[in-house]
Image 1 (cartoon, rainbow, N blue to C red):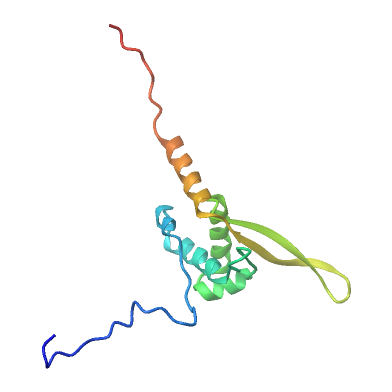
Image 2: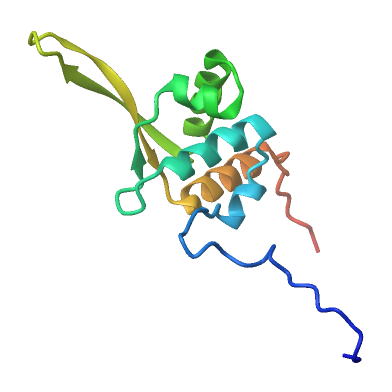
Length: 137
């Protein structure tokens, strides 16, 4: 550049050396998720243990972090499970008095290819069926 040109440093593409970010799989954008579902999925990825692919945030915590009502979050969780993006399992906890109670849900992030395959199967099933007829010579 010339002698008087000022160089502008691009800080947008630099990653934090502390690793304060997470990645979403590119294929998530082929799943037709509305913004609320995408937000819940992204929050679960944010919370996920990268080795076990599991996390235990409460519905209240997800609701607080995404700005959605608890009922909406619960609905989106069921729909994400239907799309095979996540598995959800209830947990139990034992209180100090020995009483067993429901704990938080355990979320497991499924491999994205399961969701891609599920969507492809649904899209294929939705296509109109063609009648197969033989052409005569």
